[in-house]
Image 1 (cartoon, one colour):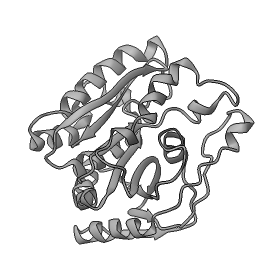
Image 2: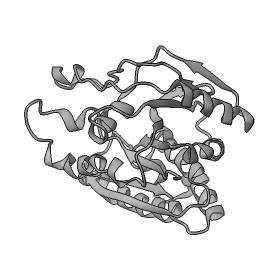
Image 3: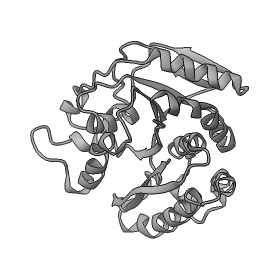
Image 4: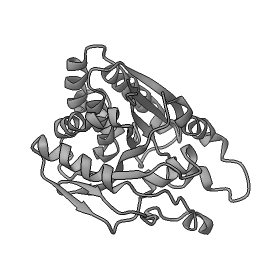
Amino acid sequence: MTQPTLFIPHGGGPCFFLNENGPTDPMWQPMESYLAGLIASLPERPRAILLISGHWEERGFTVHTGARPDLLFDYHGFPEHTYRLRWDAPGAPDVARRAADLLEAAGFATAEEQARGWDHGVFIPLKVALPGADIPLAQLSLRGDLDPAAHIAAGRALAPLRDEGVLIVGSGMSFHNMRVRGSAATGGADIFDDALTAAVTDPDPVMRSARVVNWEALPQARFAHPREEHLLPLMVALGAGADDPAIRDFTDHVLGWKVSAYRFG
């Protein structure tokens, strides 16, 4: 059965795990609930996950072929216990190499690496979505030029994985301007989210891709993303979604930001 493709928010740092022995901050609970329901929402349990995080960039698309990656605690200033979190899912080197083959067949230069740990764009949302850490995972980097058209094309190249039991997940944030929070962010964040959602869910897949490639033309675009690394995983998910229907799967306000998730297929 064909898997959908997803663009999910991964929150802020270890946001779902700040209280070592208590509930998640109420601000983050709706996002946590959305992530916790992801696997159950799929047509069937995937055999593996291919995840693209906004926190890994390389010169060219790079796949992680490690069998049991460590975690990379690439956040700063949080409680000590958040640097002892564990999420011990197995790697999926076969899926990583299959992804590299598909990208190379589409004309993309690719590389492999095994030493890097999974960044918090991987383990923080998936520790919520998959607490048992029992689905193998491969990670794909962004390409350092952050070219939206290239990332959509890369997603298209990866689409056959969906029929091979692999769930393709882009992990980022639909709004990511760390300099503004609260009421200073909300107006511009809402405007951008409405425009982005209209582009992403355009029923014409050709127009959808064209509108999202030109995301900088959307109102409040550079207010929402002074740098677009957290938006680029959406491009890969959209490309892999091909001609499938697109919906906004989740939306909420955190830190004054309007944040959305999208599903294709």
